[in-house]
Amino acid sequence: MAARGSQQYPFPLLFILNVSIIGNTPVLNHIFFSILPNSMHTKLTNFLSFLLICLSLSACQKTPLLPTTSNQLEIAITIDDLPYQTKKGGKPIDSDPAIWKDTNQRILKALANAEAPATIFVNCGNLATDDTLVAQWRAAGHSIGNHTANHRSAAHGPLADWIEDLRQCDNLWAKDSKERKWFRFPYLWRGETMKRRDQVSKSLSSAGYITAPVTVDSHDWLFEFYRRKSVKKSKSETWEATLGERYVSNVAEAIAEARQISKEKLGREAPQILLIHLNHTNSEYLPQILTNIKKAGLRIVPLEKVITDPLYQLPDAWAGRGARWWFSRTVPLKRKNGKPWYRNREGNLRKELKQLLLSP
Ligand SMILES: [Zn+2]
Image (cartoon, rainbow, N blue to C red; front, side):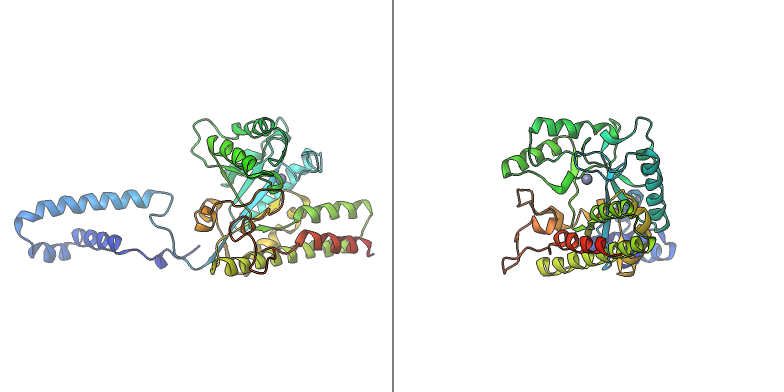
């Protein structure tokens, strides 16, 4: 955690603090009041009491009175597809609720061990009827998001159907809930045209949802896909470990890439938002990834903190199925030389992992 003492308070707050300290320290009180005319003593005492009450109320709030100016770089962890990574058609790639449960518990434990907060995005249509997974995430202090009932793309198809799929998950929150209602687009697709994207966006905001963008894609779903292929091909444990190590190094590379884009595009390191999924790969390797994030000097913070950065207040300037990640959706959409901000990580990984699968 950032040292609170390193926060920079502006002059008005320093003034309030100083006056309040004087008013409540007998010796200082005596000196300070002795230089003022008697007629002002009562007024000043009332004023100091009022300021103290204001300060006490501010200290009791969960959110800091002022934004921190900690120089430590920050990242939020977001996890999609609760109860389990989906396949084409929106159903979990593994249909066994016992596997979902075990995977969720292992990922929850990894986060708890690293004291890392996360936001978890739910496909409520995939939850088993007696499912308690959402409650477990909530109880562990993580925030909850809607990922549509059946992992339906917002990019195309009848809009009314998409809204129906979205609103099915409204009951993840009680009617009087004070929690934020996060939303994450399946496939990170927001609409094939500007008109469609804006219609989708309007339906989200009118239902009280806050969209969570992504700046770092782990491509964990692709590693999970190859892991499952390797199981079918009866690959050795050593082979699977090689695949896992490559996943861990890929996440480190993806974070480094996003940090570099931030420096080039904004001239500073903005807080990042990492995307992973609920799958076996993360149940094995998330502890290592969280350790590496910390070793790289990043502090894992809640999404609600990261989202306040000006980067995430910029308008979305893209429509279409490409440009999934936030740096490629805000102007300038491309680098000066016309090249995209992000490398073709998915294409390169597909080639690499295909080759790896052929190896013994
Ligand atoms: Zn998803």
